[in-house]
Image 1: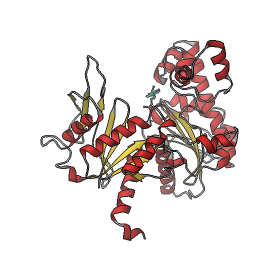
Image 2: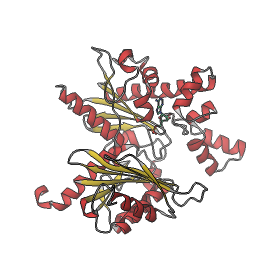
Image 3: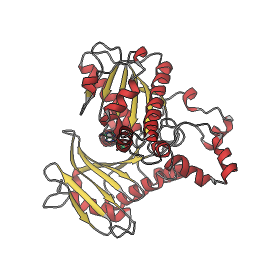
Image 4: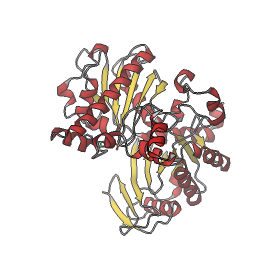
Amino acid sequence: MKILVLNSGSSSLKYQLIDLDNNQVAAKGIAERIGVRTAEGASLTFQTNERPARTISADMPDHEEAMRLVFQALTDPEDGAIRSICEISAVGHRVVHGGERFVEPTLVTEETLNEIDAMSELAPLHNPPNLAGIRACRRVMPDVPQVAVFDTAFFAPIPKRAYIYALPYELYEDFGVRRYGFHGASHQYVSSRARQLLREGGRDVSGIRIVSCHLGNGCSASAVVGDRPIDTSLGMTPAEGLVMGTRSGDMDPAIIPFLMRRTGMTPDDIDDLINKKSGLLGISGTSSDMRDIQSRAEAGDERAALAFEIFCYRVRKYIGAYAAAMGGLDVVVFTGGIGENSPDVRAAICHGLEFAGVVIDRSKNDGFRGEGDVSAEGARVRVMVIPTDEEMMIARETAEVVTRLLEPAAHN
Ligand code: AMP
């Protein structure tokens, strides 16, 4: 079964055609600068298993045109990945916010689209471009089933004590003010992969207590017991919790009215401040990119060193807090651009957690690439590095929805 996975941003559209029969990516690429008037112009990259990436420059005034070009590239008789659209069993769309309404992957209908639209208030930067991608895709491939897979849905089972803020309860009832959590596909993928690897190694994984740390440009930690998440660090919006590239994560909420009174900042200014000017960028004053932070810190830049230290300290605190929430800890998983690629970050986070049974093997950790275990022999907690694969997770979830629809009798 081949599933096309789409992730639409405001000016970009990432796609992967995934063949679930062999768990391989048959083709992938990205359309960039959609609807943006720049000298550079819009472009589409396309690559398959057999052929290296090529870039096509083309006019893309909107997502629909971008989608048409993706479709053309996929079915190109010369070097496409499929002969016709009939080979695509379904399209899986990443949608950031499903609110309380969407707690599982959902077949897209006009009604679903309206409901996702209504959710835009909770994710004004993300849901509208996600919707534009779905609508464009429905126009270009009207006969292919489309499924919306929500970033928030994996966290639907977290208990009330983890998702209700200590604000007047009516704010939850009236406006949906609560923790939803994000990066769901990533936490679901890496935590289930960790369980699979441990099971293959002969371990009983029922009730296993995992903290998964998704550390990329956006960062979040999740506590997962068995296959059930019980808490996560991102909140009503993707601004809470860990220090991120440009987002602050946790801070005293009273700083906001203080700044508004003191500097005359508006709500939009504050949004900009906590989402785009804070985090590693805010502390270092120079970069939101962990590679820059590390190299500047090594060269003696004190603010970069401080950004690195605060970043790792915050993750360490969350691991400790989640260990307490779960009544113990069996596995820590690192993923995301930083988690997968920075041994120094992994080592700095784990340093100080030895009391909880977390001990990294320095020689395994340094230069580690790919998927596996970097903990010391005999350590009580397994520390694992698992490259995330959100697209694969979305493809599997999408396939499940369409299989259920196609074979209702088998599931009755
Ligand atoms: P992501 O959003 O998952 O693509 O992750 C982006 C982040 O990963 C950026 O902060 C990058 O600097 C960071 N990153 C990628 N490769 C490395 C590396 N080798 N060492 C440290 N950070 C890295």
